Image (cartoon, rainbow, N blue to C red; front, side, top):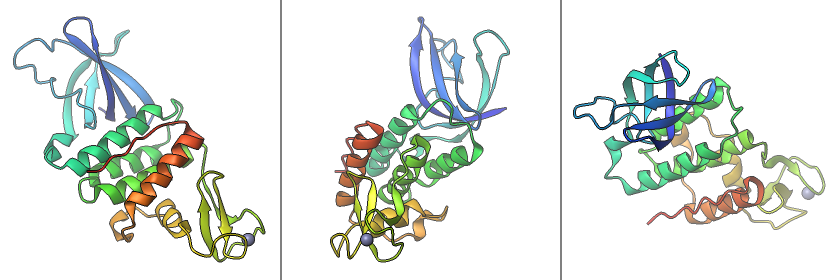
Length: 220
Ligand SMILES: [Zn+2]
């Protein structure tokens, strides 16, 4: 069985869908047929955000045979913060380069989705900042862009993607937030909460500047 995360599905002919999944081996697609039939137990497969294990036919167009649900976003459909965070995660997965095929990134994304409902804003921040690596636009959090010192870093310049120390830039700043989410471990919930409104504005600007992706994050 192949395991994957559903990130998109489109209608195909009258009664089928093509479902796109992100897997350890990269992005794949599978056709789901017979969706007009009553009691077709494959009907819930195409829901975006599903994590599934599935079998498919070895035919020219791989076709879904059966599947097991590992995680369904429908379990949290009354949690509005979760739904907004999930929308953003799925949006980013859609943009993810086709050649991302390492199991670490896959396991990371799976972990994010598995924990997302517990603290949607915190886990979404972790996801968005760490995923910059997969887009090849890692923020430089290692040294001051001006004097190259590695300590007393306090300011992260969202438009330039670089950090500044307290001598070269403002002596209060947002560096700590970017640092802690970029280096957050799998136990995300141990990271302290932030002022998410400000942080999401910065993250959105960074994605617009460097990934050319408009995230449009709106928590009510
Ligand atoms: Zn400096």
